[in-house]
Image (cartoon, rainbow, N blue to C red; front, side, top):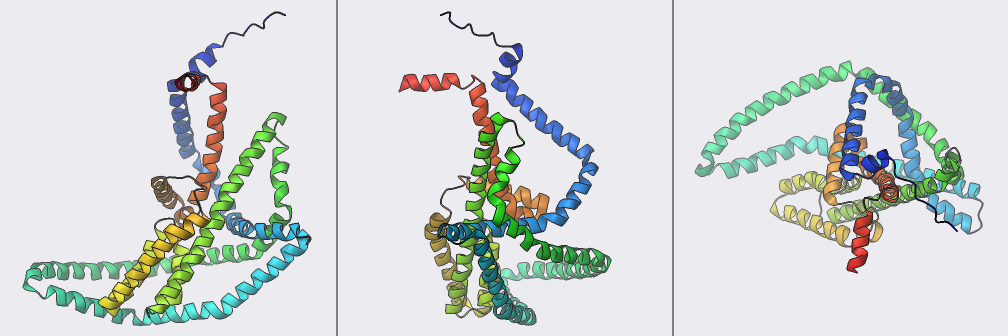
Length: 387
């Protein structure tokens, strides 16, 4: 039998696919070209952005609840309960929890929030008196003069800001009602989207993949499964940690006698959805109240914070989240800063799961490239020889 002769590599393969420097340069140029073209024709995407602004909120809310409820639905289905009955049962449970929260928790939060607003001027007076006591020392006389001058400028600036805010509020009242309408629409449509996600969610990936060429279907399913695993583990883990953080802060603040413990704990839980920064942001009002209450209360607040951070970092987060995402903390901070700058609060909350999904796609593209290019063969062979 004659040996099959190898076909000579084309010039494109030799100079582009098999040249790491040229390939990297082409990728960079392609990305820059796409960004440049996007800035020139961004107006073409305005209808798309408007459409996403309308349908995006209910889809995002339904997706989050889907990842929370789907494991329970799967578990009940494995126990012999029909999937449709499991979904309706969970819907009734969730509605019951929402009603309980509206009846019990919301009035408490409203009461504590109104009390805080009413007492805020008194709190500020207490802090001002304490600062004046410290600055009454002759050593701080120059600093006090500078602070008084800065205080006058700050008051003038705050007055201007309030006036501008009042004018902008009147001017943007139409936008406010538009936002309210969007939220109401999301609340109405979200349960229907969630129902069909729970009922037919497992069929979505095979349905979309069947439109791809036959050779691409299996790897595409693999990529979609990994993306789903990454996003679902992050959402469930992050919400579980946030719930645990809220409980710990509520219990801790209640034990030390800090005012507004329930409101501060719930706020800490929501803010904890922002990785690394949420807990520290939640401590700002708690530390403020600790300063108002005196040195002993401030120390107690800091002790609660240290205990919470220790339990969260050493026990809850490793147990719930683990190292599923394998994302460096510096990368997380950069993603948060970028997504927050571009998309605001929604970007801060969704930036990490979107990055995790994109990372899966890029990783598989890179793995495909290593199979079609011989750039990495020498490294593999040298490693084998060294072993």
